[in-house]
Image 1 (cartoon, rainbow, N blue to C red):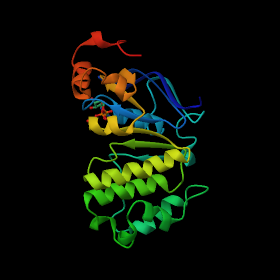
Image 2 (tube, rainbow, N blue to C red):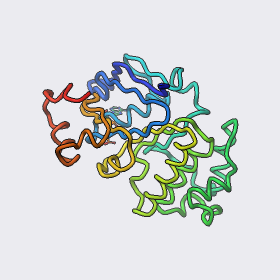
Image 3 (cartoon, helix red, strand yellow):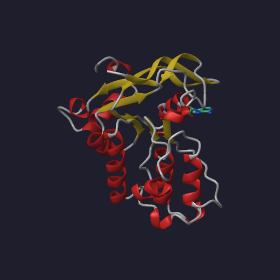
Image 4 (cartoon, protein in one colour):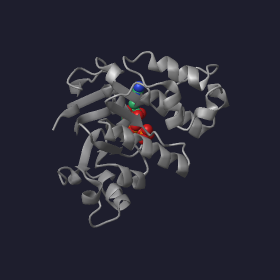
Length: 238
Ligand SMILES: Nc1ncnc2c1ncn2[C@@H]1O[C@H](COP(=O)(O)OP(=O)(O)OP(=O)(O)O)[C@@H](O)[C@H]1O
């Protein structure tokens, strides 16, 4: 089993705030892993560390066998904070991002896959929230990456777009990609993830296939019980 990314006892402090406080995580090739956790749990910080945008205060982070940020052409990402140039068209932007990868997919193919073909000549300002998310996905996919890091990728999407999104992401997985994504939607995590990782207070407090986590209860009950201010649940899961 090839480890695509790993975090070992990772701490990240911002002054008095511990965004991560001893996070451990390993994701293997071909897995689709959901990161769940309450607001402020540390999920976005994990993505920023994995992309090499911030450095850990302590601990070890590896991505595709190297330090984060060094294999950028093999990683595709969707970040919540992603700013987009407003006066550029959808097609231009996807083309531009593709050029920074060694073997990009043809832009028309990516637009087709993300249902953006008829929006190709629109500028970013003229897109709806869901279309903007699809554009971010197109930008994440155009480089045919081995690893997709997706921070709340379906947040602004309607039901049909969500389904299309996951069909597409699954197709990338079938071609060998690995996916780590954050979501607040427990049903989504249950439906699409091979493994659910629950983060709270900067640590991973549960890590199991969704059916194991929710064996006896509804996943929402398990999630609330785990993420409550109780340290005793630690170690309760493999
Ligand atoms: N640049 C920063 N400066 C100071 N504090 C930060 C910074 N980035 C994150 N934090 C803090 O670190 C903690 C973890 O934040 P993070 O954004 O990783 O959480 P999250 O799990 O992604 O939350 P959400 O579900 O709300 O997106 C929070 O308390 C946050 O306020």
